[in-house]
Image: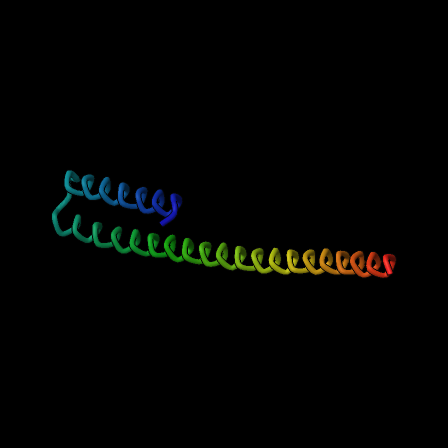
Length: 100
């Protein structure tokens, strides 16, 4: 998990813990408090799931970008190699012709 993902999860867990402690000390009836806890837990779960999905999408995009860059660099290196090899072969051929 990346540092950003760890931070998001940490913030979500800290918020959940803080809210849970707040509900425990809230001067409301137990039934009302439980309803609020359930509603907030569902909201936080949805938000956390959305953050995880976004992180997964970002990670996939970064992996795709890296793969495309690697292919591009590979093709560029291959082209450069072929250019150098052609130049070397021409020079060898021309020097062989000059010595004969």
